[in-house]
Length: 303
Image (cartoon, rainbow, N blue to C red; front, side, top):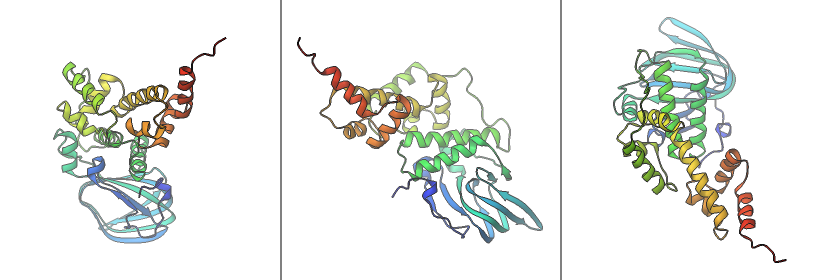
């Protein structure tokens, strides 16, 4: 059952307990929520894939030992740990206030699938106590979205994954020049026409980033960059605007269909989800729009 947020997860003093997880097939990269213990230790920790950990809550000290070298580290909310592929620690120990952290793994196969081989792997170097606001925000937002059952849809959650991969490749990749920019490049007329037809046809369905990218023969990673260069916004924001416009028209046009049915027919997860989006984007609720539409259709009284 979807949870309300990261705050709804329990705390634990077992550093290897899985509090929540999301498979790679849902978003693009596997995501795991794990505890930051109050007082615990762990031996022989190994990371097969390049990984990023972002602390959600928790304060304290840590001691990580590799061979004869022990690093004394700290934990704080939004602090990031970056581990290269094959990174291993002989011994880890924690002391402080408990919390949670979000781990995202970047296997070569998942990176290649996201970029159609443009990026063979994400060559991260192990770094401790990193602060990067965009990486932490994207990671925690991705965790919240998946824990809540992806109310904004696959298009949104996959877009977060693509954005996170892009930031890591540009700022934290071990090699330079791995993230070529698409300066001056946009989607072509035929590609824009195909996208318009697909989005219009499936506006109320579960559009995903992978299906939109496939329609125009691009990787999701490359598609997002060209889409934003073409339309000045992300695919999710663009589609959400179209859904809002269509739903507003339906609310004002027909008061025989329930607001909940209109929400589902236009790609929103629920009536409450559509209400939240419209209040945030338009400053009004669906109920207000419906009443305005009913008043406009009401015949004027005869004098």
